[in-house]
Figure 1 (cartoon, rainbow, N blue to C red):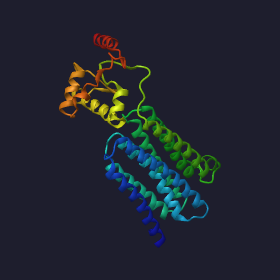
Figure 2: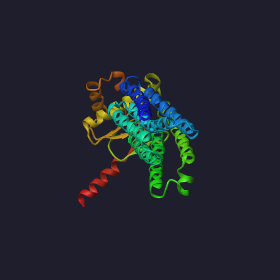
Figure 3: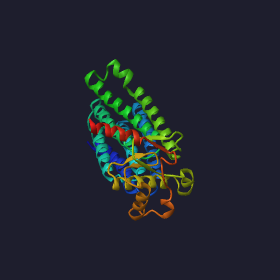
Figure 4: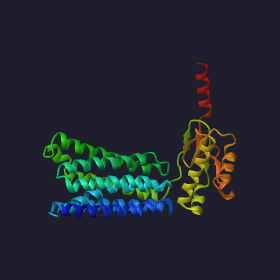
Length: 321
């Protein structure tokens, strides 16, 4: 019993230290800096978790297994915090939920013998990865492609982890299917591939969104975007540019709840959209005049192509029917 309490104390200390560092710092440095910090720690945590499993397999004792499970849950959990930081959102609530999940896994691993504890860890890992995939898939931060890679990688690993638990419980932990597809070796290989894919996506986020090579298409409405992207990025930096785009989209939704996001801006039905949004951003969001002059009509500049006539004809046709 004393050993179990000692293991739990170490696990609580590890998880608590990570959450203590994460919670107060979300929203203090730049969003990209915070994102890179937490993403890097997530990668290190995943690698450290695998190391703990290797040590456990070599006779390292239950403590290494508990630390491995804690690290395995923390890796996708820290990615959730990283993505929240990238969007400028604080992560106090999600950090509390993550801490509770990590503590549950630590308690189960320390007190419940294998393979039952493995099933609980697999389900918890599927939950963390699934939540990370959802956050990444619904993020409005550019570049969208990099975040979709993170969403896909974590979603696949969530499905794999849940399948691992189901195969182990239903078919058997010693079955050939589990041994060849879900044991430590294949799980480690798949996890390493996911880490590599996510790492590449994180590096891509570091350099900000690329300039659109092909104009995007919007179904209808006026489009307002942040123009002179390269020049403005050099002046303000990628963090501030993301903030400007986020402010523009929020201001558009203030005036038009049906406004839709487009690359580097918004599509809205607000009359005289550039002037109206510029005034809103100055009065409510504190934009300076040199920032509001960056707003341009996306259609006129060729950044966005709309199909207003086609949509209007479709609407008139449906009203007659």
